[in-house]
Length: 142
Image (cartoon, rainbow, N blue to C red; front, side, top):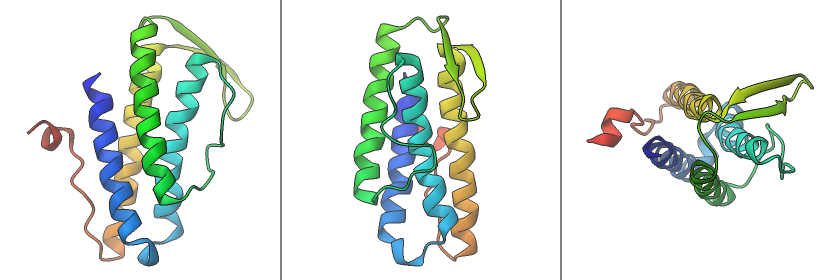
């Protein structure tokens, strides 16, 4: 899915910048980029009904984030090949509540969730005097 390509590239741009500026960052930037990567992992694994390798707010090294971002992308593409977008996914959220959504809804959420938090990181970076990467979808398509 093209949107996952976009998501991978946008995440990679933020990970690379944050890695370069690591000593200038606040906790919010570090926490949110990790959260983006972790949440994508969690949603992929909810579809597959697999055990989670890490938690939603776990912090990784920036070098590991690059690898995890690529792994998330590869797994999402595999899931797209293996599951119908209309197939239902039953899962328990981090609060212990049970839900069921389509694969399409889950994937839309992953992309939207990433965009939301990248925007928060961009605002936090600007407050530190650091220019955030351009991550608009239309810029990616150009």
